[in-house]
Image (tube, rainbow, N blue to C red; front, top):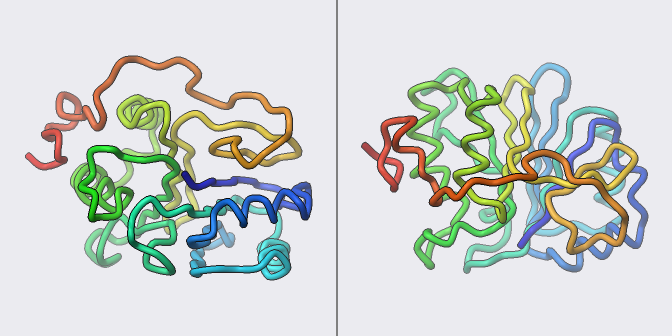
Length: 216
């Protein structure tokens, strides 16, 4: 199911055993994306050990940072399957890039494709090509959260360093927010979107002029 962690103050509050538990439960790729102060940075690898991960996060320091731990639900493994994924195939096509990491399962995706990449290609990309900054608005984030359903979360970061969390996340203490709790034993408080409407997955047609596959 994967796990995404987000912090603005670093991850030193996460213990060695907690990190090892998360790495053990999600062995199919690591992705880190963060605001370096002038632009977004992205690092992806097929695997990483605890010491290397801790060292890298301390080097990144106190800034907006997402860490995605992947547990594969399809055949894609390694760097190719590690999150985050770019929304646009070429940064020059729009002038900047948007990166997305996903926690959950998009059940309508074909079984032989990466469901997160499928969602980006067929739903997010057509919308953001028309208005690449709409994802920064609260109204769009609320609509997107309802459309993807309670079991899915998204982390979004653009090349200028702007970030958003979409869906129901959990404050696990000391400045760290988690996309789910299956690898955590801490107490927590819910963070955003605690109530839900009955939306079909990706029901964005009425609001953005797209059909259920994301195309006109």
